[in-house]
Length: 557
Image (cartoon, rainbow, N blue to C red; front, side, top):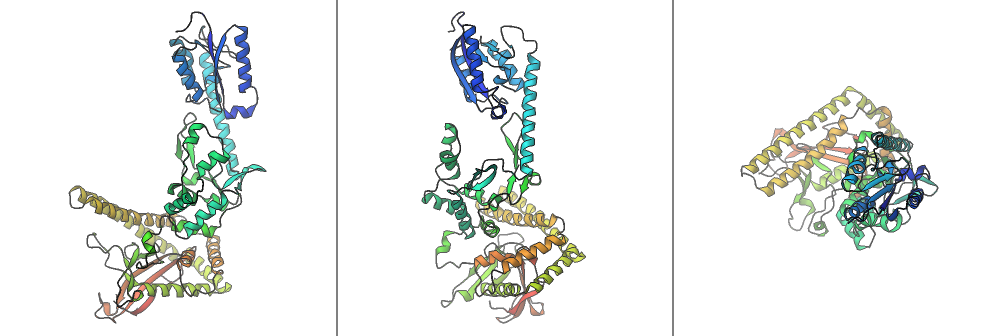
């Protein structure tokens, strides 16, 4: 119960981070002194202070303010004092609600010192005061956004440093490697480039007792509230590893502005289109080089299964790289063992040949050893080119891309990808219909839809690439220069391995066998055939003329 005319007051003090940087006029110490002096002059008993230091006035979800409301509900005070109305809050609607409705309805007198607001009297100017406080809030938000936009455009890093970096002591707007965590980032990229999955990398880091990013910030770098610190996990997970592997900041580039707040009064953020991101290259010291980064990207999501550790499993270096030229699906290892021989009966075959697949592929298949040799020879031919020959090749590529044939080829590939995407959508819709009508079980539906979505993603990537404007001469020459700079690291390849394949080759497309005389199938073991193999190199694409037969021999089924 509140006691008669006894004035029991709660003092509420608030200061946002932006206001703290602007000067001492609204500091917590200044507010405290003003309220204490007022209470002393007017014989008011100051029961307790509630302080929200570092909290915006844009919303009322503040810990000290909510704690004060709970104690007011319990009847522990009958007055609330703030320095001015802006300390209560800057949201016009909610500030007016608490000052003019909530406090009076609960028998609580609310007054401010600096702008003479008092619920015990008429406050004619109150609507204008609330409005001006919100104007200040919006104007402050606008100024902060302008400063951040200017810093981003100048390549200054105005966000929380990512794991592996810290703020440079000499320049707070620049990143510097963190000696404790930078080696962990390099380890993550090296393991991903070597083929380890994100889940395996996370498990290994946990086994070695490496502190995960958020926990590291809590323990050694940033100031967290008890509630925030409690959310920090002691363990790595594969999502954290993937987030690190996808971040180009480790190449020395600044990429900011990927999200924004819904409004000045909301904490919710929404994604910003990639075209609107602020990207600045070479702004700080990289932790990894571009070759390691790109290897990690190519292996992302292609973690090796534990079964590959068994000797009985054929270990193909072409996983995720070789596709069927007819349907676009990946080729996978298959074969048998006869009289102890494994390599002789090892094939790569299209995965889209099962009998339960509508419009299944007719069957693209190639001997593993043959493909190894074709790719090795073709790559060695490029590696053996002189500087003059490489320049001539770049000039030919420029002429082709700028000419009518280049436009026609791009248009044909674009149309092919679009047609296939429409077909995939129709197939998926049909599969769900079959499932609903009981003709297809749930497990098979899930497997088939997953395979179709993976194929759709690859076609979407091609679509994105081809939808861009035609490369200019400088871009093409730069790409060829980049490829042949890589090529100088190797003089000749005797044994083709996975690492070399990922370094130089983007994808390989294998066509069906074309038997002599127009035969659809081989009539005997030595029926001659031709088979197209298209090799698309990184940066420079396909070098051979389209549909040039690269493999010509007798079949050995």
